[in-house]
Amino acid sequence: MDDAIENAVAFRKTLHAGQRPVRSVLSWELRRLVASRSTLVIAACTQLFFVLILLFKHSWSSNVETARGGTSVVSETLFMPGSSPRGMLHEVIFVTLLLFGMFLPFVAADGVARDFRQRVHELLMTTQIPSAAYVLGRYLATMLLGLLLSLELLFAVYGVDVALHLSVHGYPMPVLSTLLYIWALAVVPATVLVASLSFMLGTLWPKLANIMKLAVLLGWIGIFIYGQSLTNSAWSTLYMHWDPTSYPMDVAWSIRVDPNAPPSPAQLFRLPPLHAFVLPHIGLVLIGFSLAAMAAFGFRRFRDVVA
Amino acid sequence: MELNVERVSKVFGKRWAVHDVSLRLEPGMIGLVGPNGAGKTTLMRMMAALIPPTEGRLSWNGVDLQQSAMALRRTLGYLPQEFGVYPELSGRRFLRYLAAMKGLPRDLANHRVDELIELVNLEHDADRRLGAYSGGMKQRIGIAQSLLNDPELLIVDEPSAGLDPSEHIRFRTLLSSLTADRIVILSTHIISDVEAVASRIVILGEGRVVVDSDPESLISSAAGQVWTLTTDAVTAARLQSTLQVSGLISQRHAVTLRLISSSRPHDGAFPAEPTLEDAYLLATGGSWAREHEPAFMPSGQ
Image (tube, rainbow over all chains, first blue to last red; front, side, top):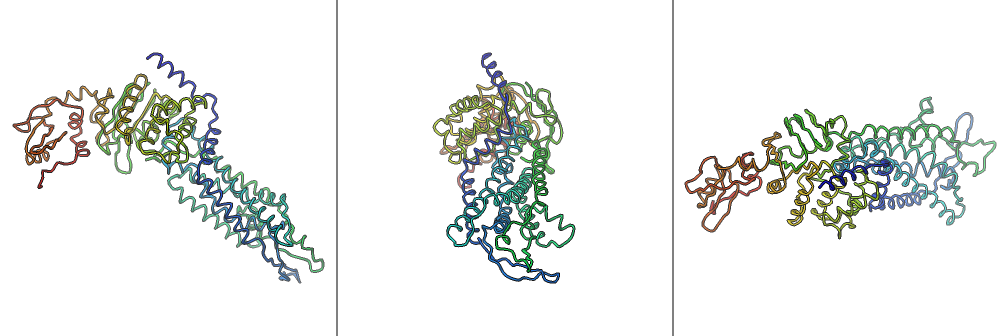
């Protein structure tokens, strides 16, 4: 019996020796996600959805405004291919990111809340994993999943545009570096912000996770609608650079031409200057990380949530 | 090692689930019993640092759980009454997952998981997805996870639920073997389990401690208050409505009753040796029997 007690004491001493709890939570959550059929179904459906919607809307007509006597008038209608720099901007922001932002809360809010719904939380909350490590590990896994899904958006835009270039006469070859720039500037910040906000709300109020998902979805739509109503005011100028939907990035730059020096189609379809959006969008990413930190340190493990 | 519960109460809304409970728990097996709604699960959740008490204090080796529960969690094994699993993982991977959360280094975790899978007799199903497990198999996974870190404090809430009789006996034997150097708190409706393995019995009723004793003393307290009687169906029905009945055997032309009464309940009644179930009924006023025994109705009534 003494041997058994000594063995037990030695065994207990080995527990948690040199462990990295955040990495442990992250790696196991990723393994769980990979093992889950629903993850594969979500990934496949997302990819298919983006491809189908881009095949449906891969080019469009764009009004060209000509300045005359201090006012702009629509002088002609221009065919705009989706694979042109400006076309890709529209495809990424208006065609795909808008819908992606509506879908993302349903993936991200469950990072911790799923454990409460599946009644695994009592098993986990009685282990010695530190609360902050548990939440941060889950956040990183959620964020990786969100970014993976946003990469699918990127692949869909590039893949469809390449396919159209190969099959449709006059459809230009998409420039990957331009697409990556648009993705990094518009999609990544939106993904980090929306996923972090959804994760934080779902983690701090796990019993209300479904309501939180809807709240974020409605908020996303609300911001998009508000972005359409912007006028030429100082507030609008400030706001448009911080709009997480990036909608002002797409529409605020109407094609205006000087009738005395009409540009070539290549010049018309070039990417508008976006450098003013860079810092605000880095700010959106930092806000997202702050929300994750709030979730980690606001998570109350010892509470009536299980009752 | 010591778990101290000092004047602990818990209120949900306006209902006192646990009221002014004080216990000092030391190594050994403690059987926690009581009727449904007596507050057993709430008390165990507070002991496992899952929910805070409304009043009072719980401490593990002198450390207040509301100040820091980490010392307790390092040495805690907990099997909730109801728990979920990740259906996409196999039983083995799920245990490895929880072993990682409990801080076991990988090699040790793999070895420990294999040991426990063998212990709960799941060697042939350990690599199947948990979604395909029966209720009893999931319960065995729950039992295995509670032992992953070789806990000093083991809290098991209705561990026999879903186990078949042979697994039930196997688990009861396992629990008995664990009590040498740890505190084991067993909550169950199966009084015979407590009788077989517990050195101390705590009966809760309406959130309060009704009895805190060892099983032998509790049984002796029922001496002279347990009777057997073989009678006709009509008399049996009449006695059932006025007295606590701890057992009933229906025969072709008669009914044999086991009755709890401080005085001889019928001229034909004989004194019987009390069991822990009888003593429990005396302590709780028969609520267990009302929950577990179907009421006897003589034919034609």
